[in-house]
Image (cartoon, rainbow, N blue to C red):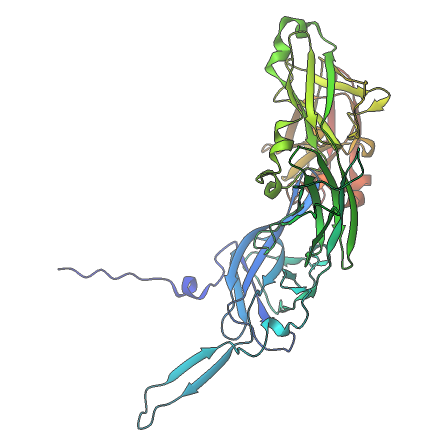
Length: 465
């Protein structure tokens, strides 16, 4: 019988960087300076969705008995490091050698029972994700640049609980002004981070007073939704810092809204029935909320097919701000949405606010002749077409292209209007939808105007960040 020998590179066993990747190392300590073992450490990258900034995990690992961690095989780029040390205590080793023995060692690892996790003393303290260099607010985290073949050392974090605020308030019926029975509220983070101990919170509203309280809320941006058994609904967006938040929320019946799509004779032929009109909550609701029972009311409301004559009707719309969308595709080869109006309000370039029942309907005007942009960039990377700042809300107008080997790129089906074209050698996907990211580069964008049916040609110089 043969024997199979498997040789494993010591570089792989030791977590040494392979060609083209890098490493981040450091230690996780308690507030008393003691090492924390078995703490979960993550390297995360910025991710943008609909212009909202968030984090996505790329690599994770656990600390050893010295509180040390090593995150290796990271593709070059900018990272942030966080740690969740929920329920962990400083690592203690008790070693003893049995009598008359020279070679046996008894090792007992303990987590002292008398000390609460991380020295916690307050009932309002909670374990949260802590980012390097030691902040619970991801917006204040420091970036870490990882290069191919490089190692970034001493990314040490002191993992400590934070004093958390309460979100409290009252929910009443908008018509009667009184509390109702069977009302539930849920509080869900808008930008959940992988590995976070907080997927959301819920509370039952006091039927006599309408009051509710959600304790120990981790700071961040949230959506608070209230729903009663009779399908009365209300929602509000909440920014939680480090002080208690008081909220007054009114539940209302769903609103009905009718409208018509106009602007092209092909609609009369029934092509409009290929598309839907939908109202999408703005800002976009997080995935954790969309998976909840309360979300069913939002998912079932605000969507309607377009009839052959271009008419549609939306029913049961909860009060709030919405983006009006035509999809999955405009029923025209080169069609685009020219305008959306509700009375005198522009609902194309700004959110539509629905507060109560109104006789004003939605009028959506379609155009049928988009433009084209072709161009050349001086290096490889990402070319971005961005609407001018006054239309930055229109995330559907952002386009990207990858130049070919000769630097040529092309954008088709561009709705008329003013744009800027940028090119980056390296850039995080979707970052250009964040106005704060784009602001320092505004002067470097190539300005151009697109008319119906026009073809524009430009030369672009790439930005080296």
